[in-house]
Length: 322
Image (cartoon, rainbow, N blue to C red; front, side, top):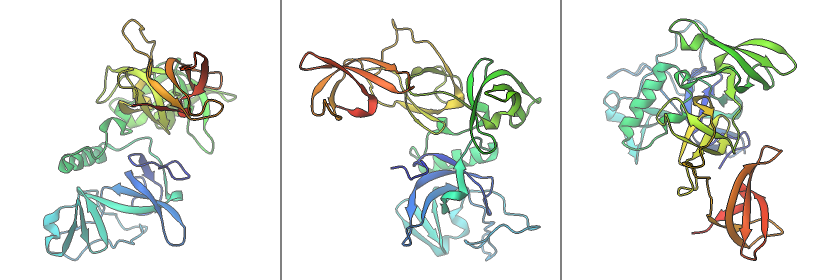
């Protein structure tokens, strides 16, 4: 379930203030305290400077102070605190901290986090190590907003997340300082603003549900499918009718628009039996005969009803029958 800002479990966010300012974390769940204040629980790589046999550490409520170097990012090691640990399932409690697979579970208010658009390579490796410790799918590596996953070509439509409000534009060219992905730029023709030189970290490909895409970077390189869902800059991809739902998720900047080869590619949900949820067809059943994007850039389904009639509905207005 999403909170009012749209932060969902499994989404990557950037911390905007405090000890963890600039760090990237993984949303665990939404949070609401007894005073109805809303927030979000985030798994972050701890900055605690814990030392075996030592009481020197950053207190849980510590704020970053000027002139005081903050501890480095490192996964929580059980051996450093094993005499004071309490284990609850996959979670370890030490003092007032809670840890899962070496990561710290920390509550932030909504104004303290924003969607992450990049992740330092050091944190990428630490999160990857945490995933190995978990021995299960703690997160999908392909959704990590790592700059090396990103690729822009001239002519691609983008959203520029810069300053107060997002704007739209078209990439004219890209450039990069030798060996430094974090210093990549694109020249963008921004709507009503002309040509602008924009850092890649502020760009998001303008991909929408209904687009057919090919994955260029990451765990699913080379795979193609239809975009059937989107949360911020994460895309849900469906590769064919036989799977009919979201097969995997990727970052928008790791794909490019492609043209489906209909001799080899199946339209998602084609011939899948569904039940209609919205009036005037609520309760009726039928079969999906086409999937397309309408003039409002919304994903639509053409349904052949059991009555012999056809209708067009939004993809959220049907329920797949099993």
